[in-house]
Image (cartoon, rainbow, N blue to C red; front, side, top):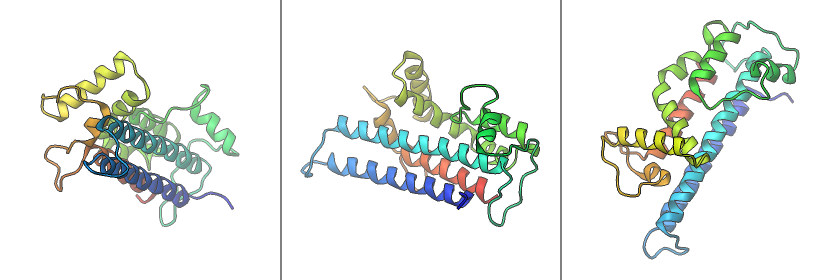
Length: 211
């Protein structure tokens, strides 16, 4: 049976749910007196991995849904986007979207918007949902790179976004996992940065499949 948009959305939603549970387990295990017990440093490392897994799931969702739209398959009760290219199969769709490179990148929201406008009229159903949450998605990408790449550039960009989110004050020795564990200032109800980013990606994914 051919894969459908709702299958891909459901897979991403399950990934997000598993990431939340993974992070919740780490927080619980780091509490005093817990059994098993892990250190705060181990907790933060696990939270980083949970976030990275969620972001990789987001990238996979974008790629798989994009291919389905390029092949002319539409979500249930949603209009089929007007296509500018008509690839005959999945391999051709992937080749088209990579534009001559070895593979297409899906981590940068502005790049996905540009690609969507190249292949679909007005870039829909990607352009509007991605643009709506562009700043948050770009922040999530910076956090993702800080987890995946231990480079000075990635660390500096992470520090800049953390400083901006925390209004200029960074706790001593703040790690990426420690940042993701913090409550986002002004969030109502209160939520961690991990939940904020995962929730935003899930919201946008649902808007893409159910415009």
